[in-house]
Every structure is written in C-alpha cells, then in structure tokens.
Image (cartoon, rainbow, N blue to C red; front, side, top):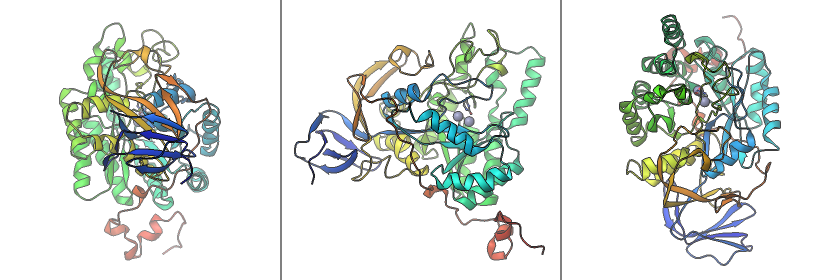
Length: 495
Ligand code: DUC
Ligand code: ZN
Ligand code: ZN
C-alpha cells in the first residue's frame, strides 16, 4: 500500500449499515484502507470519542438562484457551500433553474460558471424544467443528461414555474426514455390561487395567511395526482419537501402498492410550526416557505414517516432570503403574504438538527441518520458509492461528529449570508467538529481550511432508482403493441 496521506484514527466508523471501531486511510483524496490499526500517515487526525460518518449529501438547496419573485438568494456558491460544510455536508445539489423561454443548456452553463470559482465542496445541479418545449425535451435534455445532469425538478404550483398535467406527462415520458429522475413540488395550484384571492379580498394580508392559503388537502391532492401521472408513464418520482400527513399518506399508499415513490422532508417541518408565522412586527415573514409550516400533529406524522421509511431523503430546501429589502421585503416594508419571498435558510443546520432531534432523542438510530442525510440522496441522485459511503475507492468525504458537543443556535455561529436563522435559540446536542472533503481538511477547530473554488462539478450517473418498475398500465403496455409507440418520442406511422 502507498504511504497514506492522512489517517483518521481511533474513531467509531458508522455508515448506513455498519458500525466498527477502525482507522481510515486516505490517499489522493480517496479512501484507501479501513482497518483496525493502520500505519502512520503523513497527517493524522485523532477521532477518539467521535463518530466518523460519510459527509452529508444535500439533495435540495437553492444557491445563487433567482426565486419566483425575481429575488436573488442571499447565498452565493461560496457562502452557501461554506455554510454547508460547517454543517457536515460535503456535497450539494442545488438547482439550475430554467425560466420561461430560456434554453436549459444556457441555464446550466450560467450556473456552472457562477459555481466554478466559488464552491468549496463538490456540487452538481438538478435541472428545474419550467418550459418543457420540444427543443428542451428532445434536444437539450438528452445531451445534458449524458453530461451528468441526471435529475430534474418540476413544479405543480407557482405561476412562472408550474406545469399543467399534460406538460407533466410530457416531462415524465422524456424522463422515462432518457433514464432521468424526476423530483416533484406537489401542491394544488388552483386551491392556492383561490384561497389567496379570497383571503386578500377580505383584507387578510399577514404572514400567517401564507400557511392558510397552502392547505394540506392541496398538498395531498397534488401528491396523489403526481403519483397517478407517474404511474401512467411508469416512472419513479420523488416528492420533495413533504410537510404533512395528507401527502405522506398518499405516498405511503403508493409505496405499499409497490410503486417507486420516494419522499423527502426537511428540518422546518419537524422543528417549526405555523405559529411562527404569527410572530410580531413582520417577523413571521422569516417563516414563509412552501409548502408552509404546519402544526405539532404534522410534526409527529412526519417523524412517523421518517421512522417507518416513508421518507428516504432529508434535505434543507435552503432558500435564504435576507430579512430586508433585498430579500423577504423586496416588495416593500409591509408586504402582503403573497409578496414575501418564499424560503428558509437551513443548509448548515440540516444534519445537526436531525442528529440532535432524531438520534439524540431516540427517534431514529445513527444508521437511519446517515441514510437520510447522505447515503440515500447519493444513491437516488446517481452519486453512490463515490459519495454517501465510506467504502475503499470512494471520495474521502468524511464528517467527524462529537455526539456530546452542545450548541445553542444563533445566527452568529453560522456561515450563511442570510442574516438570521429560524432556529435561533434552539439547543442542539451533537455537532460535526471536523470535516474532510476529498481528503482535504475542510473544517477544523471552527475554522475553514479549504479555498474558494476547490469544489468540483460532479458528473452524476443515471440514478438506479430511476429505472421503471415494469408496472405499465395495461393500455400502455408495449406487449399489447401500443404503449411502445405512445411512450416513444418518435411519432409513429398512422395506424
Ligand atoms: N419553496 C420552494 O419550493 N422552493 C424554494 C423555497 C420554498 O419555500
Ligand atoms: Zn419546491
Ligand atoms: Zn426548494
């Protein structure tokens, strides 16, 4: 074996499936050995008393992205990735977001150009498809997918992003043909529109009405519809940022029926409630996100779904907007609830919150924690085993957690550029004290040790999760000599 560049010694190594007391040896940024006792390396880290976990994989975050209100997120690819790595995350998957009429290829090039000189850790992009023209689906997507942009997100709501059911089917069919993986923002657009209009007409403008205008029944309905549409085409999907039992029940039902429906939830749906929107003097605007915060019963339901495996992925949906005229108040100091920029920061606290509230309070075990925050998103988004594992040959992306370290959250200790945290004052037990990114010491003793621009754009594989299940509706079944032509992008002869 070549001399080891770095040895992480005396720690308790924990993955989504195993736990062992062993050393990890690193050569050229990759894990080269796992053994009870390794020889001395050029550099050593003593992990006595610490858990040695795969670095987190953040599957859903908005960085240097202009939101639907036209407002830019507070974080760019430097502050966003610095904040991530301080929270034990070593890979981020933000979005390259298409606007109406835009070339997806151009959008990806623009985001990649922004990220290249700034990102400190590795990154990839999910594509947001807001304008699924034939050019986009048949020309741009195939080559982008080949280049490693193997997943995309679609929206069922938001005026400038939403697809109608017909468009959703077109995108699903393209995903099926190309082997790509689709994430769905599932909320019923017209329920939201109708409620907003009624509420505003009656003078209900405060942030609390944001939650009321995004009803649970609409989240459940849209989840059910997305599942039905994906079932017709026979593709797996992942429903993002599930906030309530109504959507979870639909997902669970589909999973029980044998469909590959994956689900994601986020820390805000476990730690915050719609009551936070009632805070005085527009403080409630800090808590406006979609789907909105719910209630304690919803929190309990989401915990149940985390425990019973309904959820595979735990992401932050980091969408940081400053509490000023550049962010939340872009429309003026007293906006009504529809004018407040939607989104919460959370990339740094994602894993610590789940560690503390989940593992620390006995709701989940450490293996589930690793699976939800790292291994499962790596698998689903085509990065495994390079990321999300501690296997020989994989990238040495490692987070050393001190399970006893107690932290009181204040924005001062965080590294994002948002200016506030919705988790202010929360007590967290368990913290990533040292973080390695491809074998580079990235965070140590509270200091950032890696440089701007050191992260790499990841070429992702096609997700193994994206394979069709083989449960095509009878009418669509190629064996019946019909579905093959319906599902193909090529237009068939007249029959
Ligand atoms: N909801 C989203 O769908 N995206 C960003 C932020 C938010 O609140
Ligand atoms: Zn969304
Ligand atoms: Zn989002």
